[in-house]
Length: 174
Image 1: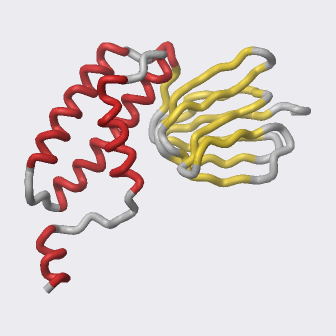
Image 2: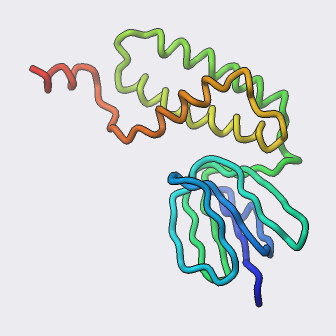
């Protein structure tokens, strides 16, 4: 493929997208990056977000969940937990799911002494909130009313602290 990139997005369900592109931009945990033909080898962790790829003068977008990306001089392969293109986004359903996540997160945060299970559930909810917000952004209707949730979700996921029980923390302090 002279001067082109072979783009492939793979999920646990199989190949989600195969395309030939002139340029690919993807979200990593350290920020957005771009790949052009002739790029040096790269391996990066994907952040939930929008992947943009250009085919000639046509720019296309899709959403990916967290995962990994490998890029080289003529290929870009994304291994991701989930994938959706704009046509598959159902904004009404996504907003409904986002509202349910917000209610569940508020209930978990109201608990004073959250244990390991609650901490784990908060992380799962945070990832789901980011995924839902990314779908709405892809669709063209970002979740303005729930922006607080997205910021809180990013904070939770940015912490690399292991999830420990409150009792373990008290024992360590003693």
